[in-house]
Image (cartoon, rainbow, N blue to C red):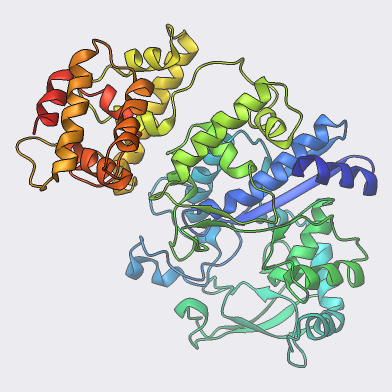
Length: 515
């Protein structure tokens, strides 16, 4: 059974009535591709629940209330230094036009989410605080401070000092939330100081001492307390998180205990998931590390992007290499699962194809392999639609032509920015510098004769002929194939040899073979 169906069925067994599925992201900079893992897991589970007759709604929170705790590397450090420690909603946007810092990066991420085919209902953290919806859980947190301290100690081993309060006041004078330290709570106001000592990320407070209500957006709960509080306020039934939060004694464990013991609320159904890695590394939005969600989404059409997001079980990491073979491999996998769907297979791959297309999968049509498209798009003499028709064995229909054009566009973008050297080709001109052996030269002569004897070159037939040279002669496979690629590409490897030779201009082909 496909992973999303399995999770949805389990949720149906354990929960009843209408369900709220929730996820969130702090808009502290360009949102990295890793954040799409949560979108995909929660979004697809919501879709499948609805498909199975459950009234499920996916809510996505843009956290614009967290403080800036670091300046992304792509921003002017001097300009933004003064905003360290302040809520993101109160920091000006780098583009000078967005409402605030958080909104600039949130809007870019929301566009990627919608392009990927998910449609959550978006809201902002600031709305929860400023509207007063968080007031009751803030009151309960302050009244239950001793219980929360005990939970931190017993569950995660984190010891809070005597008198510690689970609240971060926003300084009335400088606006910092990262540098304030609470000193007391009298039941209506919290007393605090705004420390001038260097804090997280190099932030500094102003030295102000004050007393203020913690309600109506004047303060923020610590994030593990806040996490549990949001479950209560929003009424969350289903919410997963990255595996780093879901370990014993981790943030989820702490939040679960706070929800139960302080707010008398059953924590949501959990879906732990692994990371979306770029080149094996986890990324950070606030530090400007890793590829942004937009950067990756721009390289892939929706169906391939959804395959990348949905085609791996949540408990397995997705390792995406822009400068590796990930993109050609994704296209090959897409073509494979399409065939399974069209053959009416009942396995997980066929179900995956159906979910990629959200129940509107196209009828069977011809696709040229992405790696072939990537190669042919670099050959200026080639009419790629003609080659595709030859490969198909008949004329292309409009859907097939559209697919070829789409693959060409995405291949060219990938080749320009990220493709590894083995996918980038340039036909050699002039006399080759490589010294070919007599066996290689003899093989070239045999191929040249085959070309002259055959008016039409069919890739598969030529491929078999080249292999026959190796099988029937003295030359070994490595020497033969590396020689061919050196002759035409100046390197030891290349595309499938018969198909590759068959698409070269005949005059150029025979000229190079008669070296």
